[in-house]
Image (cartoon, rainbow, N blue to C red; front, side):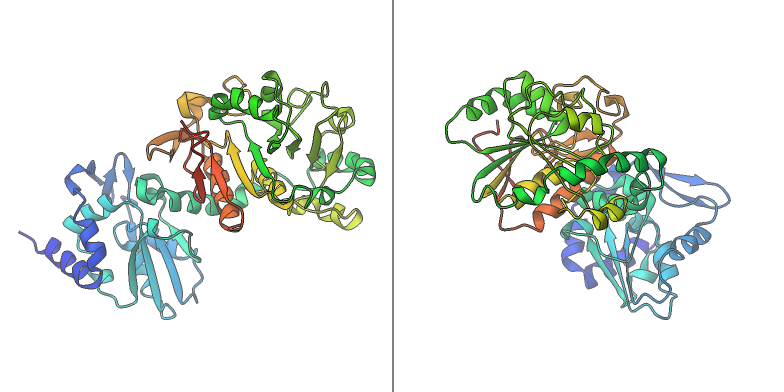
Length: 430
């Protein structure tokens, strides 16, 4: 018999009694773990190795090297087998190490079978549940295995970590040096010279309810209701994203404004016919032919991307917030127009009902359903399929909402992702 479980448990109960009580609720035997051997050994959970099976120490050294050597406070997301914690605790400059649990059951298993007392007893260590915090902390290292294995309670922080890790990669696509991008920007100059600044719309709808309509599958539940509201004499202001425009028209719903930012949007998504009374708010990467064919009023703006740095100096315009998806500037526009409340339609960030988008076939607007290898929690607390970039878009919308507490936000479906900071609108939620 070994006293490892008792030693670990004593430290946990002594130092973090409330956290210890929560870990006691976990069943380590339910974790599908296997011992995997190579030059060394590690644990594999559902086919995911917690660490290298050849040289755990060398791996931890590489991980530690990504963090500033002089950092006094460092955050580690995931507990692993304690190797990274031990590497970081050797640093003379380190005064505090916060370890964030991403999977309670996995950690409960590890402390049952492996001695973790060396780092658990270090007075510089603080042990917390990742999901107890609304945001991530910097500087951090997130253990790759536990980004995959994160449990439901800690999933929201997992999504923020992945969004942060992938930020530089996601931004790589759009640079002003790209020939296609440079050509689009050059072609946009004549339009930028004559189209009104989006700032002219700011403050134009003070206190008015605003519907922001995206293209998630749950939008299909609301076509009839949106048409009924649209026909009322006194009604909310309708803003839709570009890919929702055609499905809305097909159901007799004419929005007040369409927002578009993506250079891949074409006349297929934004047909000019019938657009006379519809405003278009755009960023300069849209095709000039599409813009010139639009019959309604146009307003142009920028976002914070360095792609627009030179244009911003030459032809100043206001900016809208873009966090990777067109829903972000649509919501930002609603707030800047003075919306008294914002109600979201089709903001699913997931594929409920095994469908990718409302009004479009599988794969029309991006990856097919079969490519959805990730998940988020829906409004019922159940896992629903999604893709990685959708989780990042969700994170950025939640951050935007948190930054605008003066505006109430409502969601109209429990089928899509749970959006922190929103309430479910009882009038629309089934």
